[in-house]
Length: 257
Ligand SMILES: Nc1ncnc2c1ncn2[C@@H]1O[C@H](COP(=O)(O)OP(=O)(O)OP(=O)(O)O)[C@@H](O)[C@H]1O
Ligand SMILES: [Mg+2]
Image 1 (cartoon, rainbow, N blue to C red):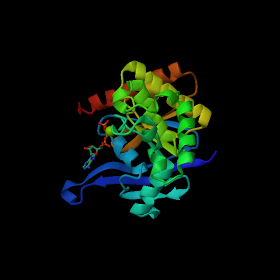
Image 2 (cartoon, protein in one colour; image 1 turned 45 degrees about the vertical axis):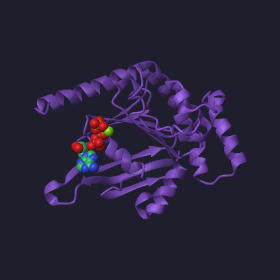
Image 3 (cartoon, rainbow, N blue to C red; image 1 turned 90 degrees about the vertical axis):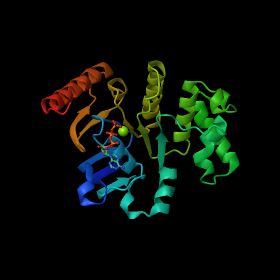
């Protein structure tokens, strides 16, 4: 299997003046194979979003390098990064970020329109992805006319329409009720299994995390622990709760809560 992502000794230091710098990620390394579904967990402020933003090419690492699909991010300038981002990465945001003035079709088509792909090809590709997600009959509707679940599937279709090498999600179930959260996780799991989609997801929620094949637990900007799913999802869920319980006990013992 190909390596889709590797981060090598990356650090992120916020702030320029020595007195006000903050190291949010310290000397962190990991790699991800094509078709993996990796979850990132850890306490608030541990550096999860910082890590995801660096992988998303939105914020450069202060030290170290990130390679996605064989391309080193530090070797690219702003234009190169923006082109790379729109071609190789798919994003699912917590609040979905659908554009209200565009209908579902136009929202999904956006990543392709930005690449100036011919209209007939855009139409065919959007229909295919919409079919995959079961939303072909709502494509004419505007976000305000969609249910929560339909909005969510529209956002996933937009994240996938350009066949990205890597799908990134930061707390994708954060704004959803438990029924819609479960539906979103089932869709991601299905995409991972049937399309071999590589997915990296930040989540606080142990139930969401139990859908992943591997979890990285971040603490103080470093990987404190790694957990592989080996048995059933129920077993993985229990293992996750155990790790989180241990991390909580450590925090309490350290007097930081
Ligand atoms: N632009 C910034 N400038 C300075 N410090 C920052 C900046 N962004 C984040 N930080 C700090 O870096 C640390 C990690 O933040 P980050 O947003 O990555 O945490 P997180 O793990 O995503 O937390 P949460 O679970 O609350 O979303 C925090 O202490 C935060 O205050
Ligand atoms: Mg965050």
